[in-house]
Length: 92
Image (cartoon, rainbow, N blue to C red):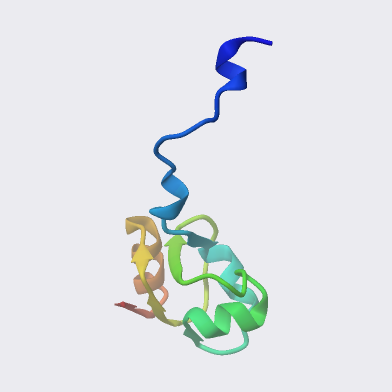
């Protein structure tokens, strides 16, 4: 067995410092019954995991409902689609 496989691996591990961000596409928001989109409503609908702490909204898909969105991060295309549908965005 080579020496580099015998020695323990030490060094930097980024898992301690990384933040997990749940990604949701605009097209998935059509299944929600309420017109408010936040962390709790997405967890209740099963669109994100129960241990998610941050949400990023992406612009894939279309939306027809007017929604009040409260998320951490929003892409430019998602913001444009929400505003054209008559909704509003609040970054938290």
